[in-house]
Length: 378
Image (spheres, helix red, strand yellow):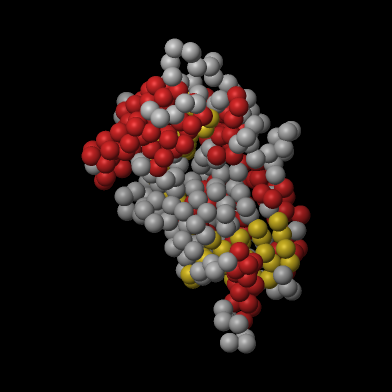
């Protein structure tokens, strides 16, 4: 999709870091407050989360009854409200492991989950990096597709155009990339895919809570102009539909065809390094880029958190926690699910150790340049 605005857990932490609940009254125990939040979740998810009805149908009433009862029993033992966060998180994983999460709004937690510096500058390790491996091969490391990295990624591509054009073999490393925004990698995609590609859109579930969540989401992203451009057609379509309907954003389609207009020298061979930490928009990137005749996915299966996306927040009754849930589902469903088992690589490389993480780059470079993964001394 052109711009899938997915709120990463990095963004979730930034959004909630300065919000504090009004506080817990002395007449209500932490256990009771936690149980109140847990009891709120099933009906809210089944009404507003796009994946919940399908999960409920697959796993059954008994599964979720047991999961809730277990969580309520655990909640009854806590003495401090922060202990509730882990219990809720465990309960949410009984629905699905990705694109469903909980963030604390408690003052004592406000500065413990923000992986940025005090002035909200992104940590350096998540910035894109270009490494020249040889006269033939370059390595482009992409730890994140968070919307804040769209400009750095595009600047790196534009400022080093001669380098990219003069190296026929590219390694794109998206291992441990937890996703972000599809717009962050669009220019890179056009540089690699010179053949026509196909992408699937997302349809949004219409509920009162979801309309409000879509309307509010860009408030915390005032400097992200792409957010409002993406959200306005979504909200317009939702306002014209009935409660419970699924709608495509105004002017968008379930299936789209793309043909690159880039005039760069396309790489001859591209290897995309992937692993189990590649999730969400990172997986959307894999679905797109693997359509290139010159592209192979190398490594391990991706995480599997893409079918239900466009996460939005709602504050739980305690005012101590914020739930992030999915408000859209892919038009690939039910024919091409990703969440079931992730996206498999074309070439599987088992990771034996931390050292193997670096060795994968060397092995992939050797394969691109010689056609062989096996070391020459074996």
